[in-house]
Each structure stands twice: as structure tokens, then as C-alpha cells.
Image (cartoon, rainbow, N blue to C red; front, side, top):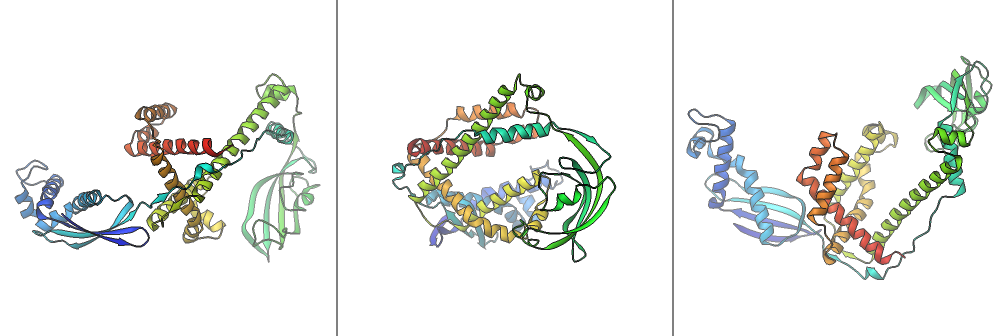
Length: 426
């Protein structure tokens, strides 16, 4: 096999690889076996027909085409190993010469792992902020718990502040219903102020079955910029009115929630809020620490395939979050007035930062010899299998070699992040 290397811009390299007839031969034989297994030939069991018979039946070019993927994959791996290249992602392949009885020649454009030179990052110092649950946080959470246990009863009287009212309503501008402006059986609690200013005031005093039409202006700083400051017509029908009995914050409510007293409930709420704040602060500090380390680090130009792969990951993450909330990607993009191309462009700066962070963490793991033992990985996999023991699909995914490698990378990164924060967070 002959290999010619040519350096390209943006941390890429072009390999021109010529594979000899002798090196191609085993792949041709394997391809012929595969073809005879898929296409039964008279007198032979599947996959057992001799090479010459398969060649006569299908032609040598057909066998060569069947073997091409194996040939290129094997030759590319050997070329990269021989040249001691650290590549990332899949190469771009272009076949230049392909004919039976001749060497195969192809070009592979590969992206190289950018060179990373760490700076004196261990001299960085970051101060951690002490966080705790504030009285206002505790009060707000207790009120939410109280609201979650409210009792509602339908009433036949005029709506007043504190009631829950179900409405059919439409929002029109220039006599046309705006996008998303038709709202059937829409519940609102009068007095919460979640609608635009003035809306709830128009509902107070109405009875079940009442219709009303009124005009209001959207706030100048409304989140939907296309509606900000515009006057609209609202057509409302009251479907039902519920009186709400909100339980008091006392020992009785605490007992309903599984606690002996209100004080014990408050203590649990305080502990939960404090822990949540500490977790968020730890995540914030970790992100800040990594960014500070990146600032001291020299990273070669990132190859575009590496950035594109990260953008695709980010889009996939977004899509997963959107679908988990019962929406679809197309509807989401329409709601924010963006295309897939806009999304890719918007994500690019963040994708670059994420790639740099991954490269920096990798470099620290190499220089500091941070890794994981196989027993650690086995223990984590067993924990996850136990957690998802009733989900066959999850168990199958957890058992895949690709998932194991993903887990190894994740566990190493977690160790590296801890190593960094232990060194520079005070």
C-alpha cells in the first residue's frame, strides 16, 4: 500500500492511498462469500460457492463494488496508523481509480485532532459563593404547595378575584384571528396577573355563559415582538367559574403532605432549596473554571467537521427537549421565526466553545494521567441496569460497546472537572 500525505488548511490532511491487487484479494473473497450467501447458487450452500463461480455469475466489477467499503475502511485505518495521525470524525472519500485486476486509488480528506497547549491554568483562582435558602424562597415554595392542594367548587355567581375561570377566547387584530389567538377552555386564576394588563379586570363580574368583547393593547415590551404595543380585540365566553379554597399554611397542611408539623415541612423545604442552589452554584463554578482554563490554553484551528458534529449534537439535544414537552421541531422553529440554517448559524459560537472545552479536558486527562478503571465502569453500568431493569430497550442500549465508551468519556470528564475545581476554586 502506498500513501502520500498532503497538509491542508483548517487542520486537515489529504491522504492519497493506493491499495495493491494483493491487498485487495482477501476483501474480494469475503465480498464473494457475502454475495453467494444473499443469492443462492445451484449446488452450493449459501456463502459456500467458489470465487470463480460467483465472478462468472455476477461479474468481477460487482464483487469489487461489494468489497469497496471494506477495502477503503481497512486501507484508511492502516494509513492513519502508519502516518501516526490523530483524526476526528469520518473522512471525506473520493475514489480515483477502480477497475478489476488493478490497484485501487482513493483520496481521503481527514480532520486532525487540533493541537492543544495548556497554559499555567493552575495559577487561576476562582472564589466560590456561599448559597442558602432565603426566607422569601421558603415562603414562595410553601405557598406553591398550598396552591397545589387547593379545593375547587363550581359556583353560579359573578366571577371575583381569586376564582378560577374557564374561558373560550379569541384575539383579533384587523378583524383577523392572530396566530395562536384561538384559546378553547383556557383556565385563568383572577388576580394572578398572568394575562396582559386589563384582561382579568374585564372578566371580573361576568357570570357563566356570558359573552364579552373588548379592546386592549399589548405591552410595549411584550415577549412576542410582532404584537408589542398593538391594540387587539378580545372575544370572550365564560364557560365555568370555580371558587377556590386555598388551605392555610399550618400543621394540617403539613400532615396532608406527609410531615408531622409545619416546622418539619419548612425544614425539608429549606434543605431542598439549599441543596438545589448549591448544585446550581457548583455547575456555574465548573463552567466558569473550564472557561478560565480555556483562556490560558492555545488551541489550533478547529476543523469544520468537528464544529458541525457539535452543532448537530446541540440541535439533537434541543429537539429532544422540545419533543419531551409535547411539541415538534417544525412548530418550534415557526414560533421563533427561524429555519434550521438559522439555528445552525446561531449555535456555531457555542459549538466552538464546547469543542474547545472537550479538547482542553482531554488534554488535561492525558497530561495528568486521569482515567477510569474497568471495574469503575462495570460498577456504573450495573447501577444503570438495576435502575432500568424493567426497560428492555434501555438495558440493550446500556449493554452496547458504544455506550460503554460514551460512559468512559463521561466519567473521565467528570474526574477532570473535579481535578480542575479542586485546584483553582477557593
